[in-house]
Figure 1: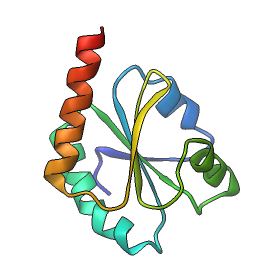
Figure 2: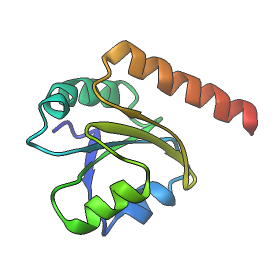
Figure 3: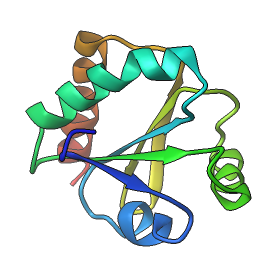
Length: 118
């Protein structure tokens, strides 16, 4: 795992995601998911690129029932799902594999939209 991606769970979800005032990109995943494993290097590469400006975290939905509850409560219906949060608000979800450039474009659009809203 790249040092730029933090592995979180239900115990620190609120602190790491909901209370964060910077854009937080969350990957909901599990180790037996082939698309999740394909997404890992893409997610880590983009996290490294945005280090310091955007927070990247991942939640293993099968690690605990509480992790699964968080995923379901936040609209996750399959893995991998990438969600975008700022100040406790979910700005959108992407389910399935996404390659590097589309992920970067989405992050840039979210950053632009949030800067325009402030």
